[in-house]
Image (cartoon, one colour):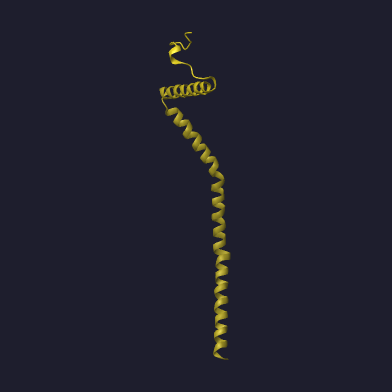
Length: 111
């Protein structure tokens, strides 16, 4: 046999053996391990929305319980003032401005 024939047979034998070992490792070792990890991740992902929504709900409930009552009253009062000012300014844009010198403290015109 010529040298190049022996070299070709050796290359084919080594390549085939290496490919068979890698295929076997992937098929019987790596693939089952990866499938198990994917299943675990899917189960964790399925449980995640329930845990997150429960945590958000609990955190919101806890933050409302921790707020002092005066803070809630003041912020509600400020929101009402802002809303009434916004409404008054919006109406003033359509109806025209009321002269401040013509108004007394009760808000009625002196005319």
